[in-house]
Image 1: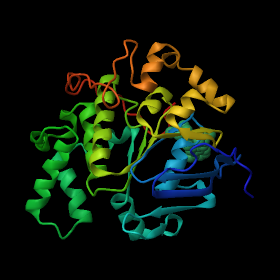
Image 2 (image 1 turned 30 degrees about the horizontal axis):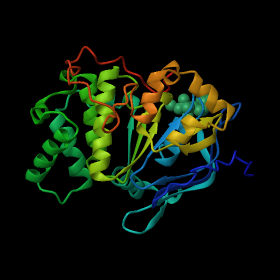
Image 3 (image 1 turned 90 degrees about the horizontal axis):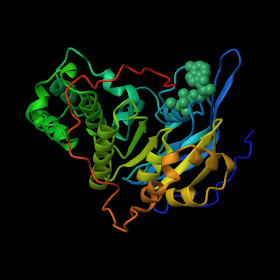
Image 4 (image 1 turned 180 degrees about the vertical axis):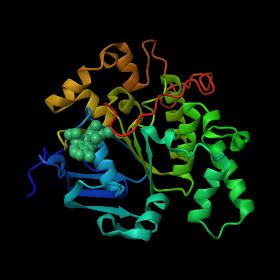
Length: 325
Ligand SMILES: Nc1ncnc2c1ncn2[C@@H]1O[C@H](COP(=O)(O)OP(=O)(O)O)[C@@H](O)[C@H]1O
Ligand SMILES: [Mg+2]
C-alpha cells in the first residue's frame, strides 16, 4: 500500500547520472506499538551530488540511512520498496537482495557511512596506523604491506591529519581528529556514496567547519556522492546541492538548496527555516548567495577559519551513542 507522498515537483530528480535510487521505501520498528519510522520514501541521489536530509529529531533520518546501508537490526524491518545502487561501472545492485559477504564488501567498497559517534568507535588500544591498514588488509588482501603503509599515510593526509599521527592512539587525538580518521576510513576504498549521519554534530563549530570544507574538497577531487544528514538546516543550505525535508517518516519536500530556501512550498519547511534566526537576517542572505552585505563574493562555500581548533583531546565530546536527542 503506497500512500501518496507529497510529490516534490521541483528538482525532484538530480540533473546528471544517478548513483542511488530509493523507491517507496518503508521501515517499521516492530515493537509493541509498531513505529512507522520511514514511510514510502522515494528519491534519487545523483553521482557526485551532496543531498542534504533535514528534519527534526525522531523523524526517521537515521533509520533511512541504516536502511540504505542495510545496517538495520531487529526490531526494524524494511516493509516495502526497493533500493538500487547504479555503479559507475554500469551495473546495478539491488541492495535489499545483498547478504553476507556480498553485503559486507559492498558496504565499504561502494557505499560507506560515517556516524556522529563514529570517532568513539575507534579501537582504543590499537594505533591509528593499524586501524587504517586493517581496512586494506580486509578488503584488498592482494595489497602488499608496503603499499598498505603508504596508503594509510596518504589517507590521513587527505583528511588533513599529519602522517605522524599514524603512531598515535585514539585517546591522543582530539575529537575532531578522530572523526577525520573515521572519514579517512570511510574513504579508504573510494566509495561512490558516502552517507554521513550527523557526522559533525558533536564537534565544536570551528572544527565542524573545517571538516565540512574538507569533505567538500574531497568530493570535488574524488567524485563521490554524499547524503548529509543533520537537523541543522542552515548548515545544509550551505553545503547541499539538493535538500530533502523529512517529517514523520516522509519526505515532504525535495528541492535544490536555493529553491528550498527562497521558495519553500511546505508549511513545515517554512517553520523549520524560521526556527533558525541565523537564516532570517543578513547573514541568511550571505549563507545562500555567497555574497555578503558589502557585495563581496566568497569563493567556495565559506572561508575556512585558520586551523586553531585542533587542540588535543579536551575537546573530545562525551560519547553520543545511538539516538542523539
Ligand atoms: N530500536 C527502536 N525501536 C523502536 N523505535 C525506534 C527504534 N529506533 C528508532 N525508533 C523510532 O523511530 C523513529 C525514527 O527514529 P530515527 O530514525 O532515529 O530518527 P532521526 O534520526 O531523524 O532522529 C523515532 O520515532 C524513534 O523513536
Ligand atoms: Mg538520527
